[in-house]
Amino acid sequence: MGAQMPDLEDAHPVHRVTVDSFWMDKTAVTNQQFAQFVAATGYVTEAERALDPKQFPGVPLEKLKPGGVVFTPPAHATALEDATAWWAYVPGANWRHPDGPASGIQGKEKYPVVQVAWSDAAAYAAWAHKRLPTESEFEYAARGGLDRQPYAWGSQWKPGGKWQANVFQGHFPERDTAEDGYAGRAPVASFPPNRYGLYDMAGNVWQWCADWYRRDYYRTAPAHNPRGPADSFDPLEPGVAKRVQRGGSFLCTDQYCARYIVGSRGKGDPDTPTSHAGFRCVASDSKLIEE
Image (cartoon, rainbow, N blue to C red; front, side):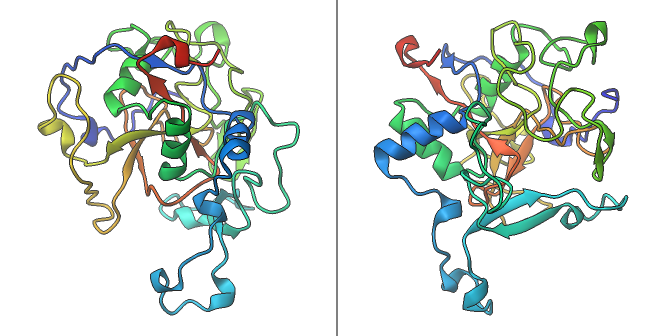
């Protein structure tokens, strides 16, 4: 595991980028931290808001219930071409109930918050006097000073035989053997940090970036402080504008999505919260970074 490269067409051409200095949170934002934000502001996330019938023509009103997209492993092996075999929209799923109404976050205060849309992440960042990282900032931080290495920790997938990130082991998507100690999400900082002291820059949960996603952006991106394109275009879903996600998640595996590789790119509908995506923040003032 770990040897197979994902499709990196959208990460080409390979080019050198410089970024101005910045500070980054050591971990993804946790349930505890997000709860503090909600308690202070009364903020209501996208997954908790009533759905607008105008955006869902033809859907019966009784089915328009707020919720989020949840990973549910199928009972049997399934073809990997159809992600609906393991993803489902679940009414009542939100950051307090990340895997559906019967789930909760009690005792999981140090787990990364999930079921947050891009706007939810941006709202938290603004409240904390921070912002979401650009894609180039995230990659710079994830590399931890290493040059052209595939992983945030170096060149070897399991140095010394030890897992370095929370990813998927077993047979995807129906059986996660949890060889790394976790089936599903893990508490933040459960694995060693990279050389910059940052935890979970690969695996555990995807992390929202500030940039719009375009598959061809690297062909025209500036060499200094790239901020992403002015709009989004994904040829695989031309009608869906997307934001960049980075780092991969607990579902990444060389059988399907090896995007724990530090140079690879992810993307997501900014209005769709899921059970495997969260975020962390950056700032220009060290006093704002939480220990």
